[in-house]
Image (cartoon, rainbow over all chains, first blue to last red; front, side, top):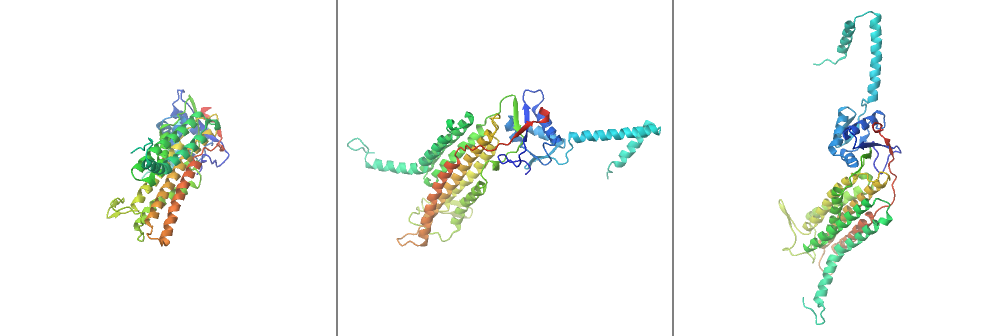
Length: 145
Length: 308
């Protein structure tokens, strides 16, 4: 069990909190989704951490179970959490967090800059460069039977 | 009823009144009074530093459950199930607790609501030893009628009820006779207690935070409620086992003044039954006590990044 049992905390670490403003124009499920995604991105919710059941979160926040379930479902669709059955919902290991995606975008942008500079040095046309990129992408794509 | 010359009821009235007092008082009224006094003392507002709503909720649920149990106990006696009466009282108490957990849940109010991302488990609110004890007692309660049904050496004593009135349970292929048949209702009550108690404990875990400004209060309220449910479950199981032990003691009673090993076993079983009943009342009172010990609450971190 990765999560601390209530009344028997396994560590002295503080439990992160969810805050929902029911007067906000942002729907409660979106507030929950944003906060949990942010906690996963910053590492406050590590991989394998069990999230409270939708019933518990709904009871604690005075929200409908369906509202919490929707937030969990969208997190699962984003690849941040998995499960949701008898064993509960847990943070996915190796989940692509927003921080991961940001650093990946930066690396890709740097590689594209390098490729564009090389193409200009070789005086290649844009179409020729794009054709090379398409061929490389096609080679990297797994072949389907 | 015939009154005496002085206007007072006659001796038969007083004998009957004493009999009713004994019959209803010992198995029903005595546990109700003891547990009721415990509930009243333990939930006195002046002694508690908890929100009044939580105290009122706990007290009302327990006292209403006791009232329901009182009715169930009297009904059990009226139906001729005197040995089941204490377990019926505890069952009413348990149903009162379950009703409160299902219907009387304080809802979070206010525009800004906070919840810790921490999974709460039933096992976090009950003692470690309680699960194996509850399950063992339940299995034992189920095993008793089975053992009595297959035990070939049971010899019935002078208290064996007439075959005409002895309870029987018709099963596919055979008929379950007394005393095995009489031990089935206590076993059913014990199983009911485990099932209802499990449902109630799952609901206790869902009790929302009602005192966010005072960390630890919610955890303590959940722990007190869980201990009350556990106390009722254990009391029902012990009462059921007590009834079965007394019934079994009648089953092995050997007639005659000489006695023998079966006679000794019979008396051991009888006093085991009495001891189990006393233990049930003690467990019920002590475990349902409102603990004042403040557990170390889980610290709550500042707001999540998206809420900042």
